[in-house]
Image 1 (cartoon, rainbow, N blue to C red):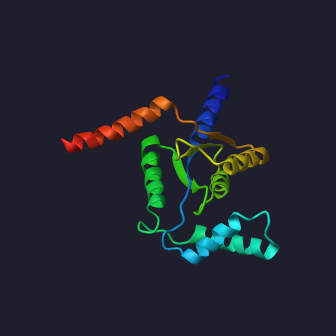
Image 2: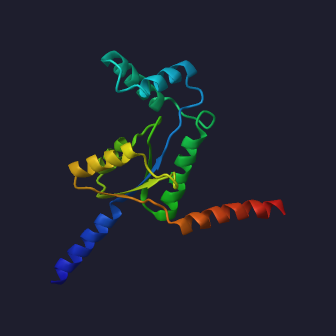
Image 3: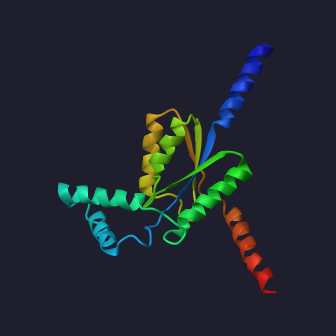
Length: 181
């Protein structure tokens, strides 16, 4: 009986180590992406249901181009904020911590989830960086679709508790008040 308990404990430890955190940001277009192309992209995006196949193909080309556009601290500082936050949380939590974006950046939410699944993670905790709004409806639907097609557990760590939000914001404000005196 003890051998079974040890094996179950080892399996539980193995599964615990196969949990991952996935930070999800909204994403921003890079500041140096050509404005005329971005305007074309936006116009197509808002008319997706009305456009022909050639226009849809053009939209998809622009969408991929924006997502794959080289990022740097000048053209997309929020991208690097999420990358840095991811590193800090990886260190603080001791779990594999990756990131994804809902719009304009790679990896997309589904790309990141499938990457974690391919690396053998059994459980993924999706953490929206926008702690007030959470994930977009399309992202929630994408997570539901992936969950229905796999045996991986995906939890969404949202909504944030109001007390945690207040503590975080109060600490942030106090750090500025202390600097001013």
